[in-house]
Length: 182
Length: 182
Image (cartoon, rainbow over all chains, first blue to last red; front, side, top):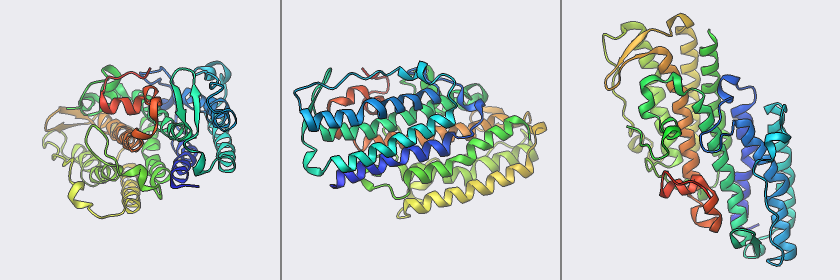
């Protein structure tokens, strides 16, 4: 493993533990509010991460290794979780995500070495991409969506902070994405 | 304890575990980049949270309970950590924060009951605020700043995701806060 692969998988391996620490058993007073960008509650975000583990990252890694740019990646359904996960408790979603992530990181470690990172695939909208870009995106996608969970959690208490809202960018940006806290 | 106090402290008690899961031992390739809003690296954000545990939340809680609106809150130094924590390893900052948070939540449980939540204090810039608003702000302030840590972590890999940046709001917003991922 190169440093890049080790460093990227180090981050990826942490996300299940972060989600457990943050969400398992957290009172619903915090978790029922959607974020402002996608309208997703924390449970929807985890569902989206589950779909990506099932149908995106490792499928695309294998496509690059096996077919290069000759067959484009399959498209990805961003909203699959909204019907699929109806009624599944959030604790179970977190554990389902954790199991899929562990499985995928084990598969990745067996499949990919540093020599593969410049190999290319073809994204149906973005064109040619490298395996290195795919793996970096996998990790930053985690950061983007965990941050989205934070935005929903904060939004649940928008009405309770009173005048302090003026200092809380995470709330101000729900109303105006370019707002700067005072 | 009312539900409000129990629910708020439930969230507050989680932040040290989240920071441990996310940051302890994380390679520096992830942690050396400042966020775009304040120019703070993850370690600076933790330092800011430490200052708030030391000089903000519980001091203001006690001020409300003991003096009401008659004596304004002391002002808070947002940048105290930049000199104070020079050279302190991030792992030690996380544990220092965890110890202060545990101590403050224990003190809060002894000091405050639901009957106190409408009691008022005086913020030097915002005017009259309630204890309920202070406690909600304490929790949302955690969410705001952990989210800021995520923004810095993502920024460290801005150059590595290639064309996928177009889909990653957490990166696009570093350049343009009102950017919408495509």
